[in-house]
Length: 324
Image 1 (cartoon, rainbow, N blue to C red):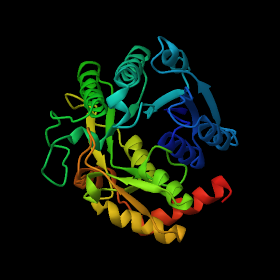
Image 2: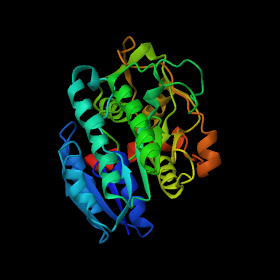
Image 3: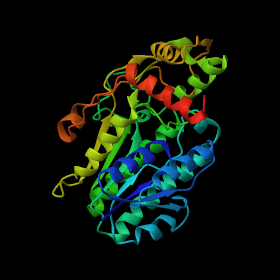
């Protein structure tokens, strides 16, 4: 049987697909290669996946009518890992329509296609730590309210969880939502802080540091996230529950100062950062911190990679990828 991974040319989707292939799974990738960031990076990821005999890529858009359902008609597919989404908090401020189309319509197309086809053993989908919005209680617990989003991106991810629960309740679709906390590592996205900072520091250019540097994030290394996603995929919510639907945090369970993150990049690059201190941006939150008790208890999730190891790993990959 096969696993369908949406967003397979994206950062997390690519990494999850690689891990599934490594354990002998057949994987169908689904991605529209959206130009939100450099498509060459997505093509490079896809080329890595294409080296595996058990992989095939479908180039299509989850927000297009019938596109996802057509792929899911393949009866060999029995599990879905839905990671395709329009990412980025700040981009949602200026391009809200893209988020409604991809994250709301696209997510609906996925769950509806799973319902109509039947026989899907488990749908695992990406949520985000952004759903906690204006929550000031730390660490963020999966039982906390998520009714105060501070960005449209966060609102779409909270909506995804509600739709997931609804379909699970009404139709018995086993589904699990995963709230990712600031994922970073090799093959990461160019719009994320680690890539932006590393590129600028190596070039001797200033880096934008928001909230005057008074930011903390629960930075979570990609290998730990992948382990959590696969553990969730293998842990199907109980069919006897009123709604076989669960939500988990996947974070490092350690909130780190952003400036310490910058210091580690400086060490790894052997370059001094030029800080451009700026106020807190619209849609941003000053701190994130994951409570992972539920994911540890149910999934055996145990993040192992500190930023002291993860940041140099990324910088080394970044140099190789760009031939620096």
